[in-house]
Amino acid sequence: MKIFVSSPTFYPATFYGGPIFSTYNLFLAIAGMGNEVYVSTSDRNGDAYLDLEKNKFIEINKNLFVKYYGSSSHRGFALKMLWGLLEDMKSSDIAYIISLFSPSSLYAFFIGLIIRKKIIISPRGQLYEFSLQKNKILKRLWLWLFVKPFQKRINWHITSINEKVELEKIFNKSNSFLVPNSISITKLHSNHLLKDKTYYNKFIPKDLTNKKIVVSLGRYHYKKGFDVLIDALTMISEKQNNLVLIIAGSDHGYKEFLSNKISQLNLTEKVFLLDEINEREKELFLINADLFVLPSSSESFGIVYLEAMSYGLPVIASKNTPWEEIEKVGCGKWIDDKPELVAKAIEGIFSSDHVEMGKKGKEYALKNFSDNQVAKKFLKEIKALL
Image (cartoon, rainbow, N blue to C red; front, side):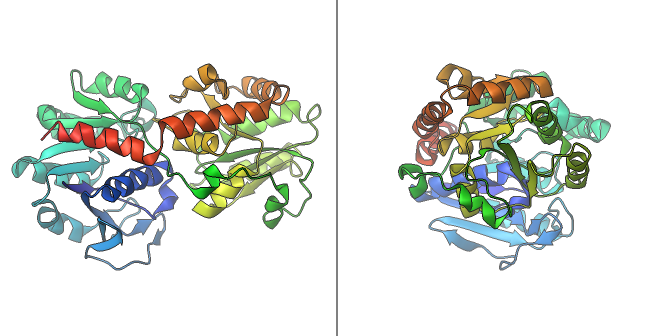
């Protein structure tokens, strides 16, 4: 099978967060099963550009080919991509389009309609009310003019029940299939490593050996709820005086605000903000921690929770995410994104057997969300469309 993928940005454009990793994991696994995957994307990575060969397909892994078009905008608009999409798509069996509000995605959609391709659109959380608030009128008009008239031709790939609910608020009786995001299983998942908290010394000139380490990962953006997490820590910092919080991520204009907040609350010895870390560093960042917390105000999936569980961490997720299951599994807390509730959840986990909770989460994650397992589900769904 030959799958064409259109996306404004693609791995290794890690500035854009979780969707970059989840789409890469999916198509890497699909290509590994003998299918050919061709991705047309831009070279954009936030304010920077990817240092890769441009405007031609390069095989970044077996059967996974990516063409990085030179772009001119922060969100990955590439004029050459518009001209090249027809040639890139025409020999494929399936056209898989990531993102709704990108000129290249819209163009790919109409090309797919014209040349009669089976079309799958992956909204990646863009249909959530939170995401639609910015440029609300323009986005609603865009959906009404360019998408809704053709909804019978669209098959939607959703990653959670929550996302299906949001989809059907706008496109009632839509054709959709649910396949979750996945994690790539690495050697570190199977090794039983002892925590080595001296690892954090490379970022923080402070002995954290005997500390309880709470970590969080994500773009420095107000929707991630880092301010809520910092406020929660303030409430328990005296009782939990050996607890520290370490956050890592790319800055989307919110890091300075958080830094000032930390100073104002006199938490500079307890809360540390790191820059974005690479994949290898992320593994070690998670493995050596004790608890993962992210009280986000909106997530269509939230692959970072899954990653944290896969490395044996109990997790605290907000009810604005689709991770209700962690309560049933016994590997974390699913709560409203209020500082007092986050504080209570942190205390509750550390007063219980948090190591055992982490083991349950790891078993749950590896059993249900491995990349090959999810790729097989995805292939089954798209083969049914052909």
